[in-house]
Structures are given as C-alpha cells and as structure tokens.
Length: 325
Image 1 (cartoon, helix red, strand yellow):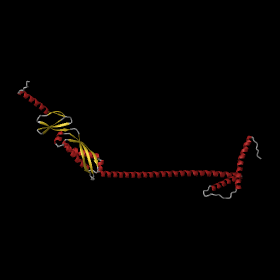
Image 2 (image 1 turned 60 degrees about the horizontal axis):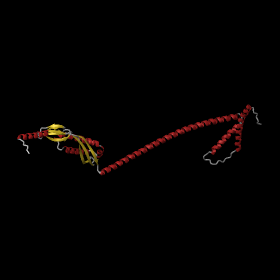
Image 3 (image 1 turned 120 degrees about the vertical axis):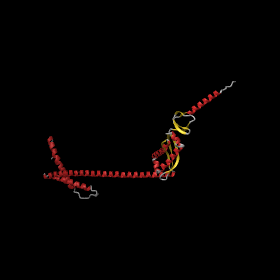
Image 4 (image 1 turned 180 degrees about the horizontal axis):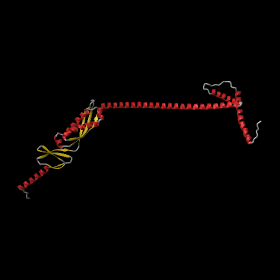
C-alpha cells in the first residue's frame, strides 16, 4: 500500500486555505433579529452591528456586548415600605424597559438589569413613603405614573427607555387590615343611619303634605256641603213661604179646613222632632187625639172637595150621572 506523500508546497497551500477559512469565519458575523452587537477594536468601542450579515476586521475587531433591543420584563421583589402616616406595607411590582442605544447600555453602566432593579426599588420606597396609606390603596395609577417618570429620567443616560412600571400588590399588616375593616363597617353603619333618618324625614314630610291636602279637601267639602245646605234651606224656606201663602189664600177664601191641615202638619212635625231628640228616651205628654183626628178629617175634606169637583166634572163630560146624595 502506497502512502500519500505531501510536498512542502502542498502543506503551505493547505495551511493557507485553513487560514482563509478561519479569517472568513472570524470576519463575518450574523446578528439575529432583536439584537445589537457592539464592536471593539483593541478594547475600544468603534461601532454597533445591526441584525443581518456584518463584516468586521478579523483579529483586530472583536464583538464586545450582545444586547437585546426588545422590550424586557424585570420582576421587582417584595419589599417593605413605611408610609407617611407610619404604616408598614409590603410592596412588589414589575418593570418594563427597552434598550435604545446598545453602546451606552453596554459602556455607561455595569450590569444593566441590576442597576434598573435597584433604581426601581429605591424610587418605590421614595414615592410611596411620601404618601398616606389611604392614598397608596386608592391612587395606584398615580404611583405608577410617578415611578415611571422618575425611573425613565434616570435610565435615559444609559440608553434605556422605561416603558411601564406597575405596582402589583400592596399588603398592609393583618392588624391594620382588621382595623380598616372595622372602620369601613362603622362608615357603612353611619351611612345607613343617615339614609334611614333621611328616609324617615321624607316620610314625615310626605305624611304632613298628605294631611295638609286632606284638611284642604275636607275644608272644601265642608264649604261645598254648607253651600248645599244653605241652598236646601233656601229652597225649603221658599217652599214653606209658598205653602203659607197658599194656606193664607185658602183662609181668605173662607176655607176653614185648610188651616186645620196646616196646624195638623206643624203639630205632627213638632212631635216627630221631640221623638228624635238624642236626650229624650221616653216621651210622656198629653196628646189631644180628637184635635188630631179633626185635623186629619179636615185634610180628608180638603182632598174630597178638591178631587171631588174634578171627578164630577169628568163624569159630566163623560155623560155619567152623579150618584152622590
């Protein structure tokens, strides 16, 4: 078996090709999407490589830092904060940031994530420590806005943009939570008592208005009834005057029975009024029955005289003979 012998020229060619391949891979760099790479020449920053195919000077330029320019999330661990009214609460949060300038993020600050985390935690204590507990629990959006403004201004020098900072949980101590619960219950009881008293007040007002309207309607009813009674008494007086006038005319004409009728009517009405008296239970008085009967007989004679003449005229008109004696 014959071995392959290489001459000195062949060895030089192979070494040269190997150096070409090595130089090619050392000078050609492919940056993935969402990343920026910094290039250093002899330890000094020269430029930034963007996503895609890039060429550097082999063995003279090297890749310094590989930074993501996508928005990143940083979890802020729980820490205790003392509020303005000396209440101790446990607070945690979350921060979102994005690298805008890879060179400044790589060379202006060491360990970027740790720097942003410590800056966020410090400002959480500063912002929340200047507020009361009630403000912490009810103004969370205001806290987030203040934190974002402070942290974003501080990280701008590092080529970083703070996009959002959110407070996740604010946990007061257990005894403080119990006290807040009692305070809330007392406040609700107070509101309930106020609403109940307001309802009773409105009810009394409506009741008084109803009574007022009832009295007004009752007064109007009495006024109308009095008007009707007066009108009825006026009609009755007119009827009495007419009856008295007719009786007077009958007496003037010589009809004695008419006055008997008139007297008997008044006599019976007087007895009726006496019998209907509320204080009168037993009526004992002499009653002249003969006079009453005479008066009734007088009434009968008047009726007979009146209706008898009318009947005789009708019989004569019909040709019927009169059979009276």
